[in-house]
Length: 247
Image (cartoon, rainbow, N blue to C red; front, side, top):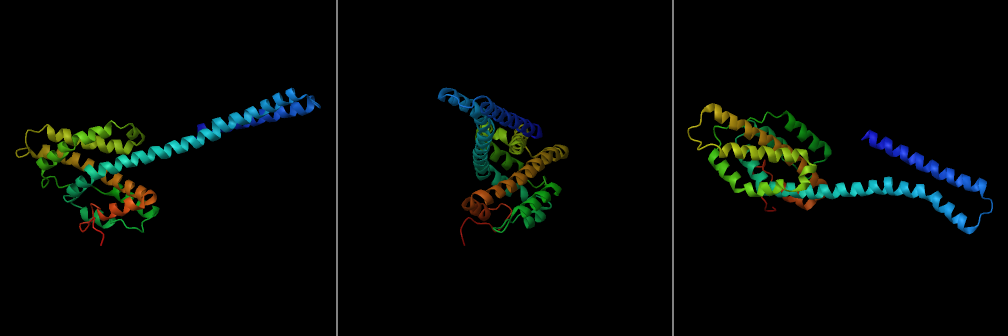
């Protein structure tokens, strides 16, 4: 980033200096130029400034606008993911989190949450052990759910917008890996403890990525789409009393 800024500054200084030089030459050499020559000098004199405006200023504005549009599309995809898959997985997995009370107490997001509260929530997630009691999870039911949503998840992976967000891509990769692990088992009744513990590790990975992305998405809705944020609050998967019905 610093190299890009340094290059742009050097280009800007060079173009401005070139423009000043051309105008200075005109003043020194052409005391009473004819209209055509005067027009040519004016055109050449403004050319470096025009290049500066197009290549640096206008390009920067277009880049900012393009990034904003990409973020809007990306978060629309993320919102669809949570509506179809993420919220259900959070509700199911968090029920078997041995320290779920810690997350539930800290992730009951409210209208008064600001940047600091969301930052504190992210710090809590980084420090949380995410220890799921895999012995209690119905792996067969989890497998069925993921298979029902597999086509939807595959369509998400085909969306080029996702290339702009590495963390969400990691979340999808973790979900797909868990789906593959469950699909490769002929059944779940007679699995050895070591294998169940391995699957539990995959579930923990999905769980952590889900919670982290969910908090980030909630922060985005809070700033950009208050009406969507309102519904997300009323359907908070960590709130055991959550209801979409407005009381």
